Length: 184
Image (cartoon, rainbow, N blue to C red; front, side, top):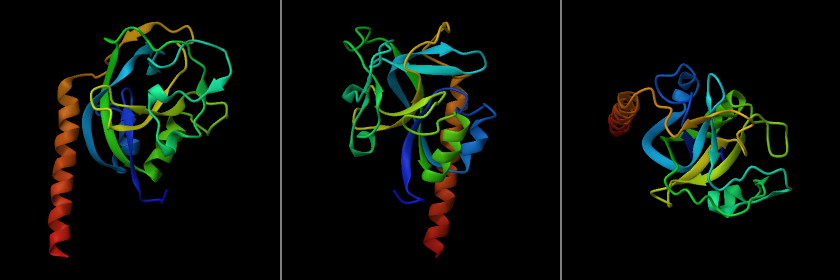
């Protein structure tokens, strides 16, 4: 993948608009839109962690789980073994799909303490699909289990307006860039 190439990242916690950490990646984001993934959040104190529905709390060997997504980019991603897919189809985590550059993803990796496959990470970065639009997929930072933290539900947004504000801001940014491109 080339340095300036864009990819999708699903954000659901402190990388959302209205949180200070979102400023780290905002310069690398060109588009954003709402989405949902199957799973739940745990409250790790000052931030949430996503546990995708396709993961089960287990200590077995690592294998690739196609239910989380797939595709060529995810082919080498190893994640904990699983049993049956979650039976709770109502467990969805609301968030924002952002179109981000490779450089922006590297910034997010450092923030989320993801150092690479088979490294000692806080979060694992896995490929996942949107619950409502399976053709929309991308990276997400996730935990394989709750690590003893309490359930935080499925929504970490401080308010709905924050998401709309970011989407509107990015639309204005794109419109401005389109006008500049037309002048060139």
